[in-house]
Length: 552
Image (tube, rainbow, N blue to C red):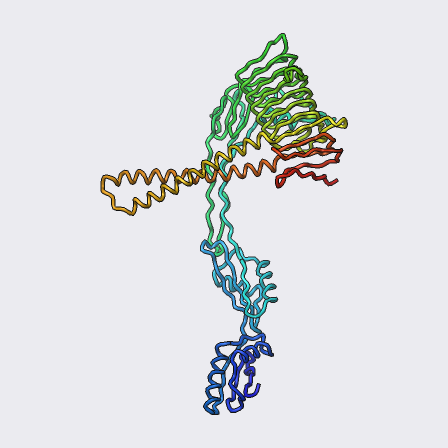
């Protein structure tokens, strides 16, 4: 361009522009000149558009007035990477803003760490994040800004409250994890001695709370942790705090221990060698331990657990806790009444070693040692046939209503006998509670908004002294309503989470195979096996049942 000269100064760091008005053919266009400089040999350097314009304006004026004065301006320069650190308000994180250099130098990781330290960022710096940002910076165009987090503080971890450690197992835990002899056979002979405890036996220990873990912010300041709290014992029936150790509960009576919801109770235990015509029915306010069989048409009713170290045939067992049958249970269906002759009813869980022709109703899980067939189950949890960690038992020809996974080795039978599993009742009850909660929440939201509007309206007015007390009472009532609304909001979120958890928990798990005739249902969504499948699972996802073969 005639009359325009651009050079680097002696230091090679600055761009100098020289304009000769006497050599110009016409007035210069600043924008065109700036674009030319940015596209030429100086494109990686910083060129000031404002300075170029000022120089052009001055040269154009001199050109029009025939003034021969030369115009010299420093219009550009090399610029190193610009670095700016930012620390969050709570000092728990720090970020950096890097402006890509104009022909200048880029910092190294060590230089950035030193700069961050000088800026007060001492702890939590990540070399990996800095390296990633520098790599991104190297690919960026001059002047491009790269932002990223480079340091994080460590929040303190609150100490856990004191924990309670049962010193004796529940009967059901003992059965599900029985001892084995040298021949890998389960030994149930001493089960009654293990379940029952004598007076003054230590049954529950309180472990001390932890102190938690201190945290820190990026400035290096320590954030102290809150120690855990000492929890007091909730004394259950038949227990007391030991005179020798305030952190230990002991049994005050001989009986069967039961630990549930952080409360240990000792049920007064009725022990017999069998229930038959000779012994009569058993109706006991406590736990019942039968070291023998329960024969046909006999009844056992207990407010606690019922443990039977034997076989049950066509009998009624009803418990306020768990029912444990270490051998089998057998009955048959009365076609006329639709009733089973062998019925197990428990508020807790039910375990049988094997069963056929029985009806089980319980609020917890149902576990079967080997096989269950031709039965009706209604449980509030899962159904497992076989070992808990690897079920390999057989389940077929049953009607099941439950609220958790149905797991076994084999589901269904070669004969194609139907196995029906229905998860609908529990889910419908959950939806009903959720809908009720949603309706109540919406009504409370509307009331709270209306009351808030009226409170604000009254506050804006000047009230006589005699009405101020009533106004304060109204404000207090509104605060209570707002607190109730917040609580209900949280409960509604919990209900939604329960719904999601329910859909994730249900399904089938077969560790050997699924035969034809197995059906599963959730409201109007169902799945049925039309042929034999190898080991596989059936789960509920996105409002439909999904069949997935297991990997070998």
